[in-house]
Length: 473
Image (tube, rainbow, N blue to C red; front, side, top):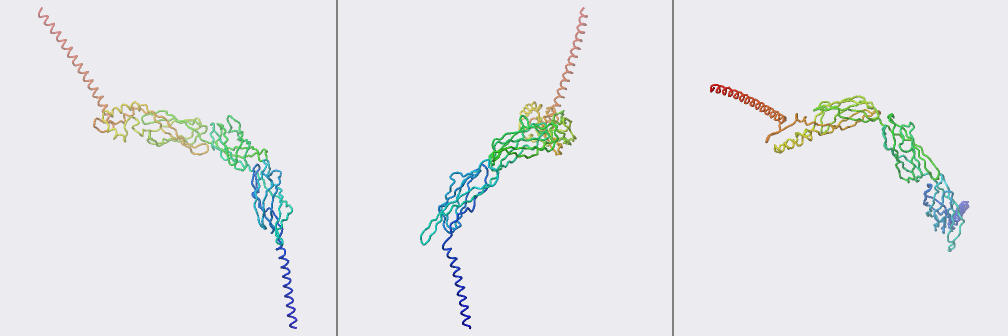
C-alpha cells in the first residue's frame, strides 16, 4: 500500500516538471526567434513655434523591436501653415533593436498663421535585419504613418516702458516722450501710436495725436515724442491718458491694444524777486507770484551764503500769494566779506601789512572805484505749499549794488610801519580836514589884519604930509 502511494507521488512530481519544461520551451522559442523592428517617434522638441519664424526640430526615433531597423527614412508632408525647409525626406540610417536615434528637420511657419495646434503628417520606411540559421536576413517592412503636432502661439507683446516727464506744468510747452518696447518674440510692423486725454486739458502742439512707427524688432524699443501744452487754468492733480496701439499681427491682419497711463499736472508756481530799495544795512525786495498756481504759506528766507549775512531774523512769513500777487519784504543784511567794499577783511589784514604804505594806498585807490558800483547776488529762498499740498522751495539770485560810501564806517588804515586799526582812516581824514580849515581861517584873519594896518598907515601918512605942507606955506 505504501509503495503504491510513493509511486503515485513520484508520477505527480514528474508530470509537474514536464509541464514546467513545456511552458519554458514555449517561452524560449519566441525569444530566440526575436521580434520585428518597429520604428516610432518617441519625442519632438520644441513643439511651440511662432508665426513667421524658421525653426529646427529634433525628432527622437525609437525601435520597439529586437531586430535592427536599417535604411530608416522619414518623409515629412506640408500642412496649411507649416512647411519643411530643404528636402522633405530625412534619412536616419540604422537603429539597433530596442535602441533610439535623434534626427533634425527644419520647418518654417507662415507669417499669417493663426494661433492653434497643427499636425504635420510623417511617413516612415525601413527594413529590418536579423540572423536565421546562421544567415543574415534583410526584410522590407510596411510603411508606417504618424504625425507630429506643433503649437503656433502669438508672439507680439507690447509694453509702454516709460513716460517722461511724469509731471506737467500749466501754461508751459513740454516734450512728452513715450517709450514703446517689443518684449515679445515677433517683430512689430506698421504701428500707429496715439493718445487722448478726456478733459482736453493736455493737447499736442504742432501735430496731431497719432505717430506712425514702421518697425520695432524683438527686444527693441523706440521713443515717440510729442510737444504738448497744458491748459493754463488746469487744476493740479492726476490725469488719465488713454493709449492706443494699432499694428500688423502675425497673420498679416490689423490688431489694436488699448491701455491707460497716469500723468500729474503739478501745483507748483514760480516767483520773480527784484530789489525795491537798499541802504547800508537794509534790503527791501519785491516778491511776485508769476506762475499759474496759487502759493500757500509763503515764507521768504535769506539762506547762509558767502557774500551776505542776515542780521536778526533771516525769514519773513508772507502768507498766501495768488498768481499775479506780490508783496514787499525787508531784511537787515550786512556784507559777509568786507573786502567786497574795497576794504581788507580780517583774513587779509596780515597780507596787507606786508606791503609798504604807498603800495597799500595805491591798491586801495584802484579798488575803490571798482567796488563803488559792484553788483553782487543776494540769494533768496522762497518756501511755499503748492496746490497739491507739497512743500516746495524756489531760490532766486537778486543783484544788489554796493556803495563805496558805506565803506567809511568799516574801513581800516595804517600809517607807515603801523598796524591796521578800525576807524583810524576816518579819524586821519577828519583831522586833516580840520587842520586845513583852521589854517585857511588863520590865513584869512592874518590877511585882514595886514590890510587893516596898511590902510591905517596910509591914512596917517596922508595926515602928516598935509601938516607939513601947511607949515611950509
